[in-house]
Length: 600
Figure 1 (cartoon, helix red, strand yellow):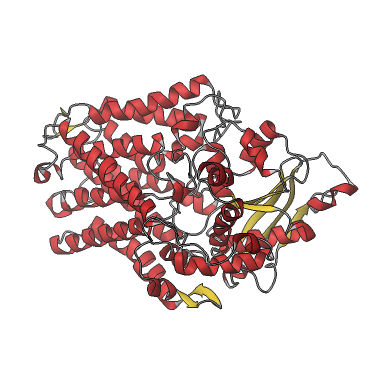
Figure 2: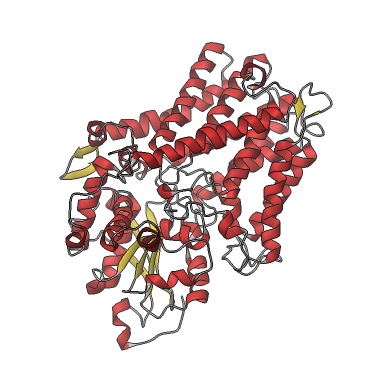
């Protein structure tokens, strides 16, 4: 039955694996265009139940039953109450940091077990990745200590404590709020967690929710109630507008077709319509362009500005409905990082802030109590998005507000035969994905391998994938067909328990941490990693890293060269500009001539 069984490519897996790699990429990319991952509807049902029961049902019950706003079913009494807004944010933070929000389950490569998160972060001796180990005191190292575990659990507890606490009426507010001291405690612990381990800050979606914790901590003492609401409006509008600006690039058009193709309830004819001419031409169609740059970029830029500035009730309601539909559309596509809770929360926040606190009723962006507040909040909120777009090497793509922009740091991992199994030596909560499928779910090894190669074809449908595979072909040469290639985002989940598509979580910092624990021989584990494209440059910069030798090559490619090619690169690798190459080591299969130890 389709509900219980996946849609799989109609090919013998063992025979399929004998084909040349680029032919396999073409076959699976074409399959993806019509079927997505082919996941059985039962899996999507699990996500829907989790969303409805655990997140919405649990969140409403927790927020309302611990606040004096009426019962869970008395929606008219609590939908516009700020304490419910605060508690939904806290509940979302808790689920995300626990590991059962986004990036959970089989759609995020957690096959068995389905939860990463706490299975890694509450366990000493797993890998942690400090953001500034050489600059922030007491953060150096990559091993999770008992102190890190205690800090993590304390942060989780602080979210629950604040979410379950009774309300407090602050002076001059007239409505209940979560005690600012509890919000300050949650914010402080989250920052400390993030300084010790950037994985935890990003996994909590701290770039989205920390500003809300901070304005909640300032409520009453610094911010009036109007200040609090207007600041909250600025936070969500900055996220929307930052995301819209980041999509003004060559990459984003390539995001829409494979995203729609993976939506389980979209008709197959509509999926096909997002490509020029299946199966010969998988480049985006005019419909895909309209979806990306009219219903996507333009709407995400214009509608939030309307919400922020409009004092017309009808226009405001139309804009509120538009943004709710925008987030519901993303939800129903089940994107690979599966940020369903985030999208539902933003739908609620939109209604709460802009319909519940209409600008025309004294909650306009010009209604701050102090003149300095508007420029100060705007400057603070746009700092990381601006810096991240100009210098993506300094800022994760999440604080840069480039979540769906297609302009991602990413990587492909290449293992010599038999080397991939060594990753299972790393302490953590799960085996490699290939072993999860075979040992945990009973897949035939060939079928499991074909399943994992599906993710490579998905990556090839995006611009940076074509560059990554081009560099791998150039670097590995005749050995290209013999290596096992893996999508780094999925492998990263096995190693650190979480990934949202951020290549900064599996760059050279993680590879060095892996090498310390595993000790790959030269040539066994090769990584091609690429940084996001700066907003003012036409190129993306990459490096090739051998885990045993360090970085052995650096270079760049033109983004325009990648976006015009088919996923399977029928014209050969896209041109690359090699700016540095290890003088004794290139490519990996030439190691017999020399065994260098120097690191770039």
